[in-house]
Image (tube, rainbow, N blue to C red; front, side):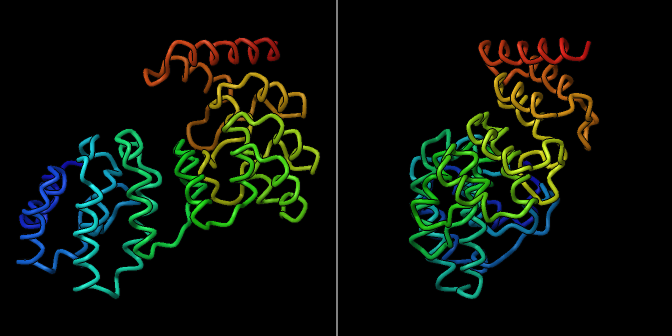
Length: 288
C-alpha cells in the first residue's frame, strides 16, 4: 500500500508526520483537525487493513515504509491522547486492533519498537490477545509478552512454544478442531515433542484444520513441517501416516512442491535452503 492512496490531504500529512517522527507537526494537525482521531479511511487495502484509523498506521502493517521512527511510541501516545479526548467511544476498538497490528508487524520487530508499542497500547487499555496471530508471523517474543501481560494460554500457542506440560494438560480437554490447529502450529515450529504428544491423542494427521488457525489453514501438518525446515518433524508425521501426496487447498502444492519452492526463496539463507533440500530429497525417496 502506498501513501498516495490516502485521498484526504490532511490525513496524508498526519501519516507523513508520523513516519518522520515529527511530534510537533502531528500535535498541531490533531489540534487543528481533531476529526483525524476518529476518521476511518475508505481505501483499497489488504483485507485486514480496510477502513483504517490513523492510529493503525503506527504499526507499518501492511508494510509501507519498512521502518519506524525511534520515537514512534511518542507519536502513538499523542494519537491515543487525541482519541481519548475526541473519540472515546472508539478507543477500545482502536487500541485492540492496533495491538494486533503491532504484535504481527515485521517492521516493528525489526526496528526494536514492538514491545514498547505493545506496552503503551496495553497500558492505555488494550486487551491482551493475539498471541497465536503473532506466532503465525514469527513474532515469538511478542506472543510471549502478550502471555506475560495477561492473555490466557491456549493449546495452539503452547504447541508453538514447545510447552509440553501445558500441551498435555490442555489437549486432554480440547476438542478435535483445536487439536488439529495445535498440530498444525507445532508442525509450523518443528516442535517434535509436541507433535508426538498430540499424535497420541488421536488427532487426524492429514486434517486440513477446520478452524481458522493462521498457519496456512489450507494445508496439512506435513506442509507446515516442511515450512519449519525440520526434517525430524517431517519424518515423524510421515511415520504417523501423513500423506505426502495431499495437495494444499490454495496453491495445489504437495509437501515436496513446497520444499522445492522454499529452496528458491531469497528470504532464506544458505543453511535454511540446505534444510529444505534435505526435506525435498527425503520426500522424493519415499515417493519411489
